[in-house]
Length: 299
Ligand SMILES: [Zn+2]
Image 1 (cartoon, rainbow, N blue to C red):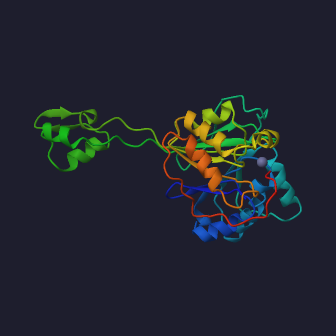
Image 2 (image 1 turned 30 degrees about the vertical axis):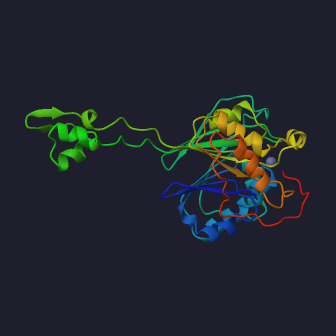
Image 3 (image 1 turned 180 degrees about the vertical axis):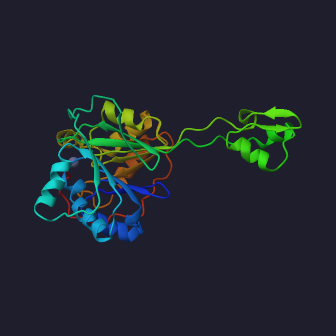
């Protein structure tokens, strides 16, 4: 069941909350007190049915800070339903953003700005699935440019607070000479971007979202030979996923969301690796897959 944590340092973001999310949080030691936002890709049960339980736990833990929640049209009604029948009684506000643009064809490459979370920019794009479904790109804040120690020596900058002031963006005067930050500090660098996808077939929107990302996390439901099923159920094969990531110039790819028809996923990993620019040895994540009953379809 889908649930992915993006650790931002002081806080973290949860993308999707399938059943079992709370078990995994305990397993990996992620404190719910540092949860900054929940992003829901779509309203299939394996992506959202863990959310009411998680919210209840936050309430039991005494949370009072607002929680940012971003998801598809209908997410608010789903949570309201749980509240109406008494399952949810939250002592903290949900700051909910619903994405209501979805045609479901994955043709629009418009990246929709969402609320910023812990200084990280978030955009969403509508994918191609059987129900409205989005992918999210999370971009870290700009990083300061590197300090050029060689240039500093050349300019006769002493070791001391002057260097700190320049690194912080202030001019300093040394020996009657004004030194600007740009003389010794490289331009700031864009923050790292990570794209996390909901369920989808390959589409223009997926490529736009993955473009230039350091890391892409994408579903890979099927293996080669299952392209017709992938199209029918609006999912991707591992090879299709790797092709999207490669064509978008993504740095690294993590495959998720495998059909339970594959008791082991080596075949999918190898098919994706063969497609990548640098066929590095595939590795399996910390959550190695248990054997599953074959044949159960994804949603
Ligand atoms: Zn789905």
